[in-house]
Amino acid sequence: MNATLILPVLKQDQIWKDQTKFEDIFDVDHFINYLKDDVRIVRDIPDWFTEKDELFTSIRRTVKNIPKYAPAQFYVDNVLPRIKEKKIMSIKPFVDRLGYDNVPMKINRLRCRVNYHALKFLPGIEEMADKLATRMRNRTGNVNPYMALHLRFEKGMVGLSFCDFAGTREEKAMMAEYRQKQWPRRFKNGSHLWSLALEKRKEGRCPLEPGEIGFILRAMGYTKETQIYVASGQVYGGNNRMAPLRNMFPNLVTKEDLASKEEIEHFKKHVTSLAALDFLVCLKSDVFVMTHGGNFAKLIIGFRRYMGRHRLKSIKPDKGLMSKFFGNPYMPWANFVEDVMITHQTRTGLPE
Image (cartoon, rainbow, N blue to C red; front, side, top):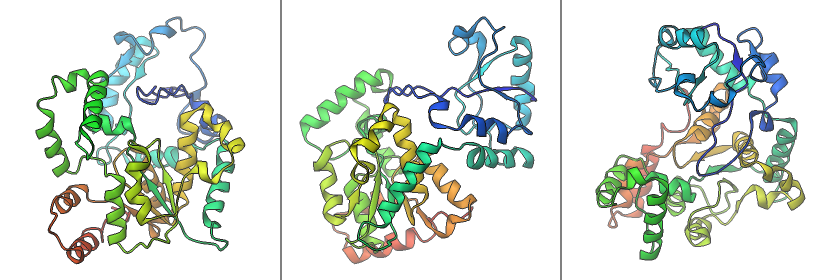
């Protein structure tokens, strides 16, 4: 479109309630300079533009509902005329909206330059992440490999998934109340959710519970001595929910375990800064394991592929097939191990 990009505004998540700005976590000068031959980028909305308050709220100023795999020509035909007419427009939501197959090669190369070169965390975040990764490797006094586990089992994720999980009647009632409050349109009266939850689990659209990922890792041959860095928010169900995983793998640590209170305090101003630390420690791991979808895990796997780190495993469990196995209480352990190994031989982050 030959358009000028105003520094991106990060979406305010309804669950995390985080007010992070782009410049709070990314090196803006590097971002602008690295892409100067590709896209003209300015830091802020120009002074001559007097409708700043409307930019992200007014329908007149927003381009919405762009098809997920829209070809490049779609932007030229449908978005560019609106930008020319209004001079400044916001485009949202804008997550992975450029499909791989319908985009010119030079644009796909630009995607890689943006994701893996131009977007660079602030030096303070990079330095702290290096310290955490080094401490992770030296936990036993020797230089050890470590696994990074992206555990998506926070209350918000459990609620948003609309899946059913083991728990007491009281817990289930509280979760139903939470869902009704947060997503009233989807919840309705709740009567249709049980069949929907079963269907989603069969299709592999439910987050893995901590205990479930523990069984999968043990079946893959990882022993109780495995050093595991857990990238996660507050796990729904707390210590009780984590107990099965911790019993199988006692060497579980988080960034809070590896850093002092003083070191971590600086990053607590922004939830996204804490996520950035997790992102980098996961990126440097010898084995990365995702338990649910999302941009965080996909970008890590993509980054490892791009940098030639696909030789380091990035495991993406087959949640649909695993739900079938977990639903069979009579399946012998030896059969479970064999099926897990065969299923995941090709799910280790190799380029596709």
